[in-house]
Length: 396
Image (cartoon, rainbow, N blue to C red):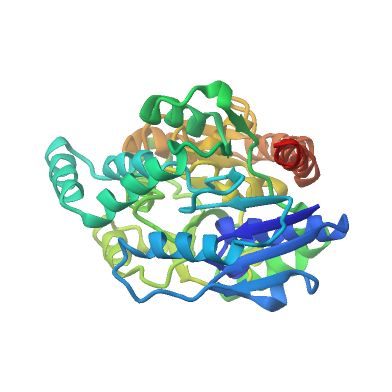
């Protein structure tokens, strides 16, 4: 097949969708498919050498106009090309397949408001959002993407996102295919664990006996870092913890701009228990240095960091606002919380992870789940969808 990807940038070291696109491109090339990339930026060294790159000029327009310009430039670049199937992963339209890795903008905007504690703060956030040009622009663009006359196959990465399409855009769930996200577990070889664990714990001043919870995100606020810091404070105040404080450490990484959260940790009196390590090029060291992942997000269509953690045999604490929780089984791989702002319940979940027997059982369950939902399984489902769309185009 001749496959074309459209995404503004593909820099896999940034994680998320950009890592996923690189993994998918490598797998398609390994199957001898011809892969093209239409993007403004890409990391050539991290992508298959045989991948065809079609540069799209970057725009210096205001943020609310940039997706419109990128989408139009993609369509102009695609004109006259003979791709079997074209796929957009974000704010593009008139392509054969739309696979919105970030979910619906309208749903994301509403969930972003949930990160504010309290009714007054959320009311103010809604008012500010209503006056935001980017919000209005992206909402209109969403209608252009999914409610236009041109038939497009919509693929989403969780049932949660399919529900958002049905409830917000009134698109029948029958017209939407769910293929959960997946990661290439070969990027996390188990033989690397001892070396990376030792290296990471020495770098971040973590003792061998420390029980380390890992928090990984670029958007600390949306992914629930503030509630998590409050939960750590609540954990240390639990009656069973006061007499013998646990050797617990929270490792926070992914963003170099953490000063507000460092100050918050100081106010809460938990600074000795938190390591802010910022962004670094190889996240595998953090995964193998940790004992479990805690990801109390307010919105994630299907978090790759959860899948990566389970591939590394890590138990997981996440929220019901994460589509990846659909791949978990209650009380097996870890815990799925209803409300990240419920500090007491989140603290209880952290306390369960301090028990070595429970942690070991959750790690074994995480390993089984990761083995069942592999990137190869995901790839086969996605390839079938590509082939069905290509066949329909050919008939038309």
